[in-house]
Amino acid sequence: MVGTLWCLPHQSNDKLELTEHLQKEQHVTKELGERLGQQEEELRELRDQLSAKEGQVQGLAQLSSRDQYQQSQLADRVRHYQAQCQLTEILQQELAQAQARTNALVTQNSDLRKALAERAQMAVDVHEKDSGKVHDLVASLSASVQQLELERDQLVRQLDDQQTQREALQHQLLEFKKSGEELLSHEQEEVTREGYTKLKRAMQQLEERFKATMDQIANLSDQKQQLEHLVTQLQGETDTIADYIALYQVQRGIMRKRAAEKDDYISQLAKDREDLKAKLAELQCLIVRLLEERQQHSGQSALPLPGKVLTVSSLSNAVENGPNAGDAGNVLANSCGDEVQEDVTAQKIMHLLTEIESSSAVDGSPVPETFHPCPVCSGRLLTV
Image (cartoon, rainbow, N blue to C red; front, side):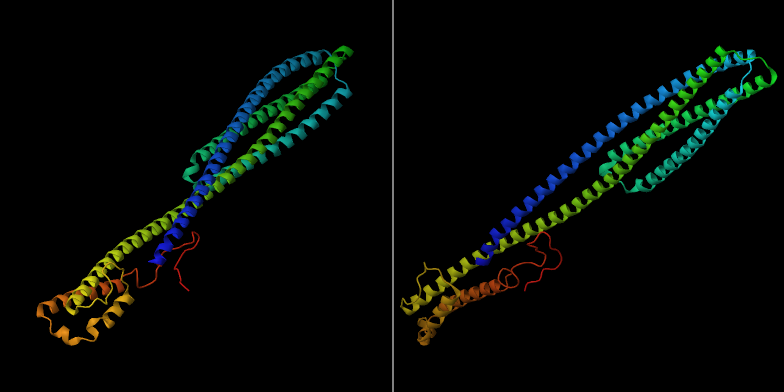
């Protein structure tokens, strides 16, 4: 009984420690939720940035359209000037240099387009492989990442359109060169100084606009690569958060199971304690009754008083050293009814003693095998 009473405060301390651990786990879950909110905010910011880039691409498309219109007007003027004058060797050299720069830009943009297509394909493949690993608890975050990838693909298509427009501009430049050469071969009119200056200024403006357009395309390509890197980081953080949530759920289930086992064990101990107290009370009453009956027959008062608490050792001493130990003849002289009543009381006492000895609260290990005082332990508990 003393060991049982000592275990109750110990179990209460264990339950307090378990409650503190659960509160810590709840705090960690709250921090993870806040982190998910921050990532969703970052995704919204990225979506806003993509919208701004789309606006820039549309502005570039309008600028390219205006450039094409101006280019057509410039081509008409050049044809008009070339119909009246002859191009010199200096103009041919400048056109050759412009063609070389245009060819270099075409090659560079072709390589860039291939690299963008390969990166887009790799991103789609990685997304298809990892889509099955995303946890249900972060489905909203995965949907946001997919939306971001769709917007990125749209940006790639817009870049391809810009490249198509650039190729069209290059084709127009080639036609311009061919028309200039044809005019030089068929018409041998002299070029005035004023016409040559205007033509040269127009060519410089056209080259500057072409270079500005190419710089803007290169900037958009760099920004797209940065967005792809951010998407990859968000996917990795999403998988990490899903693993943390799954691990937390498993640990929480184990802790709940152990808490239930502790509660069941404490309830069983309380029940056994109440049963043992009831049996001891009944045994004490029977012992007092037996002693009173023998005291009445012997006429002596050497036995303990009924109001005193009896133990097993005092019961043994009382039975061995009682009045009946030296006066067996007086017991044999009693009536048959008294002997039968004493035998019934003795049988009840022996029955209660047998039940107490065979009780799980007295015999066996005081702690069940499934009980774990440490929240981290698992498996079979060994008592050393």
